[in-house]
Length: 72
Image (cartoon, rainbow, N blue to C red; front, side, top):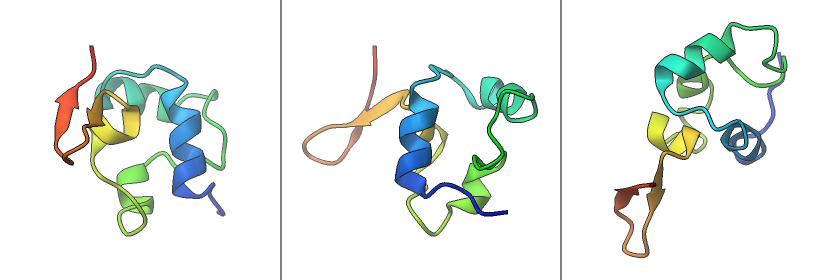
């Protein structure tokens, strides 16, 4: 399977407003997930941008000093 590159997939996923890894798993195994978005992004993108579930889902954001803070 050829998946979208990490940055393109990240933009798509963040628009879905999924808030947790549990919600992600439900979505990942549903018919709603496009086939070119991996169900296990932590494995697929581990060497090409993966920074954890909170980064993937956009529930934390990077501040100017490079540390993460909770998105409200």
